[in-house]
Amino acid sequence: MTSDQLTFDNPVERHAHIKPHASWQPLPGLDAELDPKADHGETSYRGTGRLPGRKALITGGDSGIGAAVAIAFAREGADVALSYLPEEQVDAEAIAEHVRAAGRTCVLLPGDIRDRELCRTMVADAVAGLGGLDILVNNAAHQVYHPSFDELDEADLDRTIQTNLYAMFWITRDALPHLPPGATIINSTSVQGYNPSPMIINYASTKFAIIGFTKALAADLAPRGIRVNAVAPGPVWTPLQVSDGQPAEKLDGFGESSWLGRTSQPVEQAPAYVFLASPESSFVVGEVINVNGGANVP
Image (cartoon, rainbow, N blue to C red):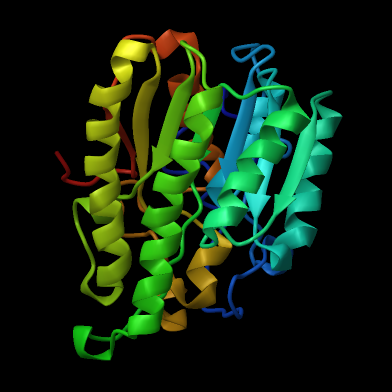
């Protein structure tokens, strides 16, 4: 079954033909090698002109949710800069092709955002390449499971906190001088911030912290006319899952515990980011949109 985001159909059946199965890739994981392929909206997302002339920096923009947001933003009229690890170049170039096919500028910014100086340079390069900046999507994340708390590797704990939290603070601070009134910041948190799984306790802890960061920063920046919000996805089929984000055996039927009985595809997350980036959400501040297929969360 094929459909786009404007098609009227049964949400239980949408994308149900994409069935995750046990598989594994070394970190950081590539969409180019993901089986089955995820839907980022390459053929299914149709823009309606909601972000004309906007300029967006998206971290983790090479695959998964970030890639879907990049395609959606471009088809809504925005130019896009993508931040990603150098090892993910093949994925970033594939997404850049879709952005440029929509007639928009795409700036590629490889580098590890755990490096403080890299964050400064990345933001500066995004501003130079786009001619400004008015949307920041803090989406990049690191997730590796550990069978128990006793086996939590402290080096991986550092990597998780540096990628998911420190970089978010740094990039946001570097971007702020460039963000005019009307600009928006959108942070990717997770259902894990509300319903944490013990085997990804480090990841879940950072996602809980991102909710607090979002709400506190929203209160700080609202008087400047800069809105800050977040999206909390549920299970989404991305390379993060197959690169030790979950045990390989848990990927059989991944996401079937959601109320819709299936995992989400990245394209299903993108409309929430489009809404929060657009003037349509002008009175939405400090909120978290839960796109999780059904879960008991606040």
